[in-house]
Length: 267
Image: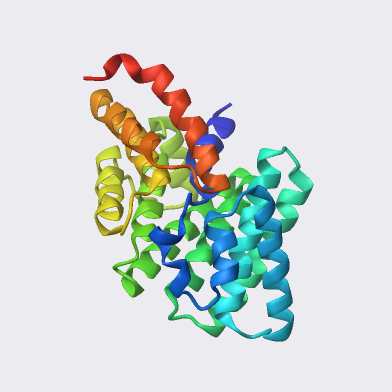
């Protein structure tokens, strides 16, 4: 019983996929704007297009870390789509590909925060396919990769949201679940919901435009902290942000569900 609860709690963060838009992520100024536009704010079908375009580019430029980490991201997008469709085999296939591409990108450009970030995200996502022990190890890799990336790119707001998501999931573990985890990973940290809120608010501060997914996460952190009125305020803010991408659509569904559950706390 504990393993199911533990997995749901600790590794849900790995399913993170950003609800992004061009203004927020400066797609027009990127090295590969067409691919990034599809990855960052494309609809569901656009993710496969992005994967195919990036794969073609990788065949031409097989040792370009900027292409490889984008390919890892594209794999993560398809992993997430297949996961939501309950296609476990395809979901696992894509995330294993993502790990391979991200690892190669990181080896080629170890000082690139994006290669570090996407390796951590893909390894974390792969935890759901592993034993309990390996799931915990994947979560620690995710944590360590985000910390490395933050050191390299302290202005990257996405990294603080990712770190906050990890802290949020860890804060939800029961005392019993924590004891199990520490037996496997001796240096497992014990962040609180307040720690997660601080990092998500840092992401909000640094972000150049409103970010639906991060505001949803802030609301969830406030729910975990027992500050329900603040949670509803953030849910209202998140709901008002236009739905642009496939990820935004998924976030909007969750926002509506939480508002329905917690609307009585609206001040």
